[in-house]
Structure formats: structure tokens, C-alpha cells
Amino acid sequence: MADDTQHIQTEIAIIGGGLAGASVAYHLAREGYAVTLLERRETLAAEASGRNAGTLWLTGYGRTPDLDETLGMGSRDIFHALQFERGYDLGYRQSGALQVIQTEQEYAYARATVEEHHAQDHRVALLTLREAQSLEPELSPELLGAVYYPLGGAAEPAAITHALAAEAQLHGARILTQHMVTAITCDEDHHYTLTTGQGTVRAGTLVLAAGAESRRVGALLGLNVPVYAVRGQMWSTAPQPRRLFQSIGAVAPACYWNREAVNAEGEQPIPAELTHRAGERRTRHLYGQQLRDGRIILGGDRQLVTDRSNDAQLAPDPEGIATNHTHACEVLPFLGDLPIERTWAGLMPFTATLTPLIGAIPGYPNLYILTGLHSAGFERGAMAGKLLSDAITTGVTPPILAAADPAHQIRAIITSE
Image 1 (cartoon, helix red, strand yellow):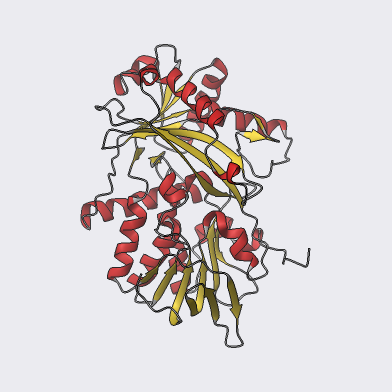
Image 2 (cartoon, helix red, strand yellow; image 1 turned 90 degrees about the horizontal axis):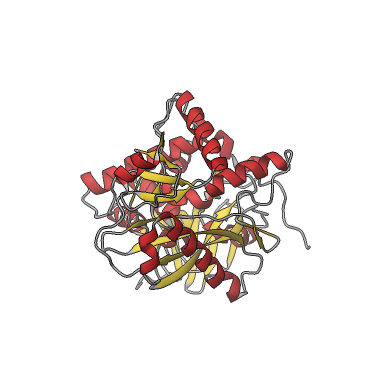
């Protein structure tokens, strides 16, 4: 952009141009704050926010909404407002979502899960194969059924981020791309100075919303942010006539992760719910949808990235893509006749327990963080941004964010090690 960034003064600076950061920028700017958002890439939504499948797996608020339900349903309300009130073309649709069942073990797990949902008045159903095929006619006849999310659906992956950023700019926010923050200092007046290749930005309040970059960005302040970069990967077909009507997923990985958690006897893997451990595949993972342009996008896998400088860890894994394609063909046999046109990967921010970090960082004046939304960032990031904005503008943290209090996880300060 053309802005001279040598000495920008702003009330609030936000590091990270994904969905969460854009949401914080919008909701703060709407309240009249001078906001500057910095994104290191050439465009917004360049990482997980723009590289995911855009699927939504909502169950409603239920009887006693927890953090996940509040973030998911609140984000849906924001999607509605952006598309139906503000006129943004998000491709959002409440089409429903199906997680298919392939084994008896998966069926038992799905039935128990649905019963738990019903006990909390959540909207979810266990369908027979015939009932599932009435919603998705090309499902394989070998399936045992599906879990149905009537509030589920999909949207275009990057569209929400760009819509939120556009709304933020309408309210006066400054959006700076190609601005990688390389240093952060805090002066005696408790103002933060962010150094980039284009100059500096000085702000009284700083929000870290850097996704999978959270550990690196936190280290600039001496913080040890316990967020892990996890690679997800996708593939797509060429445009097709409408063949898929729901968002599609599989019960298999959740069934495995539930069994793994029990076997671990309370010891959580670092982080939880990966498809690979110690370089070995433990479970398959499948989700996706058909976009309005006809492309079918599907993907899966969650692999820990241990070396960010290793291009092989950041690029799609051909073996993983092949495994995912095989799984997809088991669920939707017609995919076997469609070649893969494109593959890509993105990095997601995971914490060890999958609990996000949303709120003030203790010991630092006016420093906030929003990260760790793992694979649900697309579904929950918009509302997470609003709730953090509420905490900043009112000085009172919404009670629903208690579980995500950074004080629970950000304890250690980085030392010379």
C-alpha cells in the first residue's frame, strides 16, 4: 500500500491479518478507535483463514452454552449481518453438514455423541444411510449412516476476512499488508513500538492475532506463547455440475481422538487431535464442500510443523493427499473419476488442549492476544474477535472467556535458552 509507515501513531495496533485479526479491527474501529492492522503477507487471509475448507459444524447454543458454542453461533450471526445486511458476497449458506459413519465402532461413538448433544438441547441427529442419501444422493451405499448438523453449512474461505477488513476500513481502520513485525518494544509510557521493514508503528494498546506465527511474535516481547503450528492440507477438482449439497466430513478422526484421550489416562498429547504422531499416521481426516464455482474442495490431516524453515514441512504431502483422496472416494465414489486439479496447505494455531488464548496477557500493560483457535478458526474467529474487542473497550472480560484466559497458559518468559 502507499501509506508512509515511518512513524505511524495509532491507538490500537493489531498484528495478524487473518479472520480473527480482521474481526478485532472491525469491532474496535466501529467503536471509534484508531486501529492499525499489520499483516506480513501480500494479502489478508494468506494462511489458515484463506486456505481452509470453509465448512461450518454448528449445533446451536444449547441449554448452557460453552465457549465453543458461543464462538460458533456468534460468528454465524456476524456472517448473517455481513451477507444479508451489509451486502457482502460471502457464499454463506446454511446447507447442513454430514459426518459419515463407516464402521461399527464409529457408529457406537456417533450414537453416544448425539445422545450427549440431545441432553444439552443441541441440534444434531443420527441418520440412517437412506436418510443421509436423501440429503446427499451420491453417498456410498457402503456407509452405515451419518451425523447430521442442520445448522451446519459453508462459506467462501477468505471472503469473511476480506469483508471484515473492508468494514473496518469504512470505520477508519488502517490495513497494512507486507508489514512483517521484526521487533517490539514497550516504553516508560506503556506504549508499544512495532518495527517493520517499512518503518515503525506506535500504539497504546497491542493485540497479537498472529495465528500460527504467535510463538514467533510473542518471543519479540519475551513471551513464551504455547501455540504450535499444525499443517492442514487440501485438494480440489476442476469445476463440476452440482454434486455435493452439504458440507462433508467423517466421524473416523473424532472417534479415534476420543479413544486416544481415554488411553492416554489423562496425559494429553502435545498438541491434541493430530492425525500423525512421531511421523506416523494414526488416523484419517476428511472434510470439505463444493464451492459455487463448481470446484469440490476436500482435505484433512493435522501434522505438527517442527521446522518452519523446512519447505517440505510447509508444502502439501503427496502421500497424505493420496490417502485423503482414497478416503473421499470411499465416501463419494464419483470422486474416483475426477482428477485432482490443485493441492495446497496452510498452518493452523493449536494449543496443547485446543483451548484458545483470548484476553489480556498478565504483566504487560494493554497487551492482548487472540490465537489458538486450531482447526475451528473459520467457524469461531469472527465472534472471538468481537469478544476480545468487548474486553478492550469496556475493560471487563466477558465471563464466557474465562476458560480462554491467557493467564492459564502464558506463564513462562523466554530466557537465554
